[in-house]
Image 1: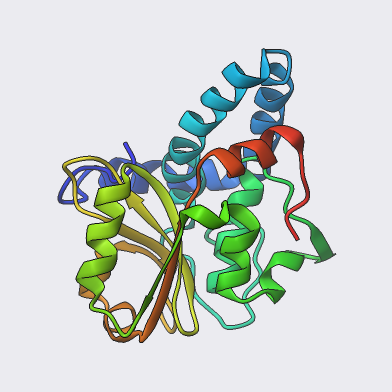
Image 2 (image 1 turned 90 degrees about the vertical axis):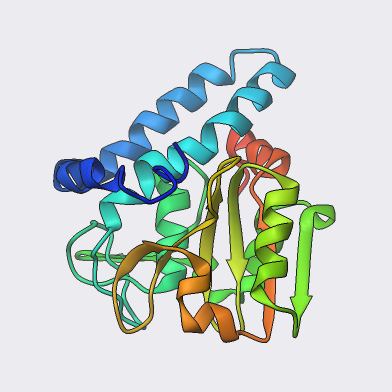
Length: 225
């Protein structure tokens, strides 16, 4: 499931398991890198199709949930869910890194991991991950237009950039659109975008769906800078 049900009730099971998953969070990347080696043995078109189908579930089902409740901090760079704090950009970078994408690390000190990607604007992050044709921009438009566009494009994981924030949207056909992010002045949450004032009042929004280009970057190990 990408959205854990229309009311989010499926998250209760995730909450029960998240501490266990968090304990071995670095092992998550190791497992996906093993999958990477296996998929590279397949014909390219077949492997890319498998990766494109896998990544949304890898993120929403494995990488995101352990971070639920982890404290937000503007400089937060924790590398272990549930410990320390994590900023919105670091949440995006850490979860992409966990599922096997080659997100470059600039510095690792103690319990903190710094990613080069975090130095980019939300728009640059999206441009790094998706093809230009799949990027949609909304200036001074109601949030409902963004939600409708996600539903029109279809099921999957999207990166969304706001005036001063970056996060993920998760959508599965016939379900609501959900927002995964490290919420400023709060913690990592899963909530509906229309329920949050920061998202609702943003004047500028940009979205990009993680699809074929992301799958190619994953399969080829191309650095995300």
